[in-house]
Amino acid sequence: MKKQYFIIFLFFCATKAICQDLLPPLEHFSSKKQAYLIKKDSTRIDFFLTDLDRKKGLIVNVEGKTTEGKKFEIKADQILTLAVPPSDLSKFIGISESTRSVAKLGRTNTNKLNRDLVYFFQEYAEDRKVTALLQLLNPDFSDKIAIYHDPWATETMGFGVAGIPITGGIDKSYYLKVNGKTKRYFKKDYDDEFEKLFKSCPELLKKYKNFAWRDLPRHVYFFDTECE
View (tube, rainbow, N blue to C red):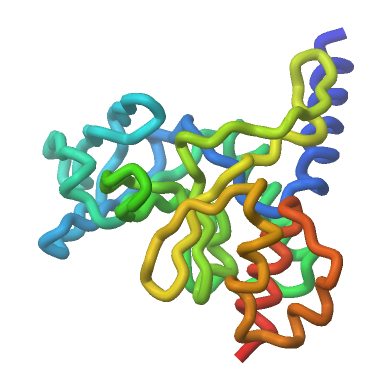
């Protein structure tokens, strides 16, 4: 019976993976695989994660042990880049989702970032007047527009079976980094923001005359790979 439930669970995960285009926000990370961080002074620390403290959804403190075995603790506001390996379960339902969906879009570029790691970058959330480590959700096509998880976002309603989400659950807002500035974009405003975001690419505006918030990853992917 347990085996049957596990197979059903894997089927639901696979179904969910086909529907997703962005790496989902992850919370659980491995302490057995190597991570790294880059401080504001450009110092790089390769380490194994001990603890990741959060407050109201934001990373506030990182504890770990360097590859030389030295324990350390560092505040999040001192970190420019944090790259951590997901736990095995998170990796299955997370990294696999992103890899399959990006491949489905037509092209992958896995040379820039290590696909075994989840990346957080220090960004200034202007609307909140705070600096925070935000998770990058489109690591394979983020050259022109980076899509970050909004830790304050609400989600659209989804459908699930036995507590496992199958459809829906799309965040109603993301932080997008465009031309060096990070701004919060909302589902309700996308009709007005779409043309402003992609006005430099007539091919995209022509291709996506009927656009929707749920297709934001495809719009960003096209913009990243097809537009000059």
